[in-house]
Image (cartoon, rainbow, N blue to C red; front, side, top):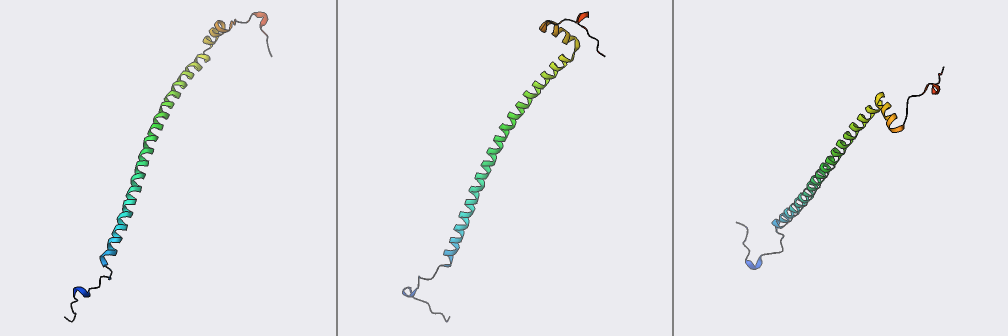
Length: 110
């Protein structure tokens, strides 16, 4: 009990409050965590937007693929039609006015 109590008039209020620095540290930490949360939230929304845009793009590509497959089927059918000699003969007669060659038009090649 060697310490003497100071009267109210003798108190020195210029001493630094040790809790004041701690509060400042917590405020800075809370602000940093809040900023990181906002950055992460913006990144999450951007990722979600990219996912939706990629879904639309994928649906468009799928539709284009289906259209190309239908065109391929039509072209294969037409190609098979042109490979058939009877169909070619009929097309030559009807569309182009062709007829089988006459005997004087034939040439023998050796």
